Length: 255
Image (cartoon, rainbow, N blue to C red; front, side, top):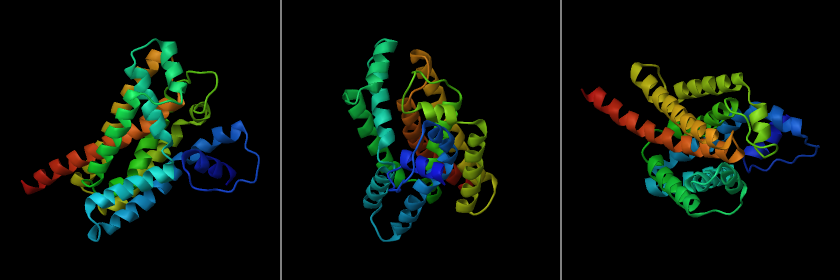
């Protein structure tokens, strides 16, 4: 459980007392636990949504978003902001890498966080409960896909262990977990539910992978900030496509 604890502290702010030495190889091996930790993040969001019968949906949406950011520590929002600052600057490759490593947040970064929070606030009120359980898993699945298909852009960095530790079958584990929990949450397998579960997952991961791939080509590889960007941007797209798919499915059922 050492490596599980390592990844839990790496991806969340859940307090875990670690009374052992942690080496670089532990971070590399701990990437295996990423899908499980994503479900741990999603579980309290799913159960908090059960209070929708008693709490105004907008107040509940704020609580769910705040809980998500509290559990994750807002770690990946920093990656989102730095990525938007770097690629919004339209500078050279080296300057982009410098901006990505800069701890300060610029105009594009502030705007991206504001748009992210507003989008999440609205979408959380519109989607089915299973989406709240699984959006952390979808975001981290996208991160695994991006990490597996790109090399690291720097000699060292926070995300290097994640890139080196990602294996193809970890992505398979994520997909199986997503399918299994989507089935449990939706309650039955039929054409409509398959589309509701499948389309948002595939579209969000594929679109963000394509965007990250284009960014990686400009700076010569992936970074920890781009991994964070992939997680949070996939999250928003997944919830958006879930909402749209639900609307279409409702119209089809009426017909």
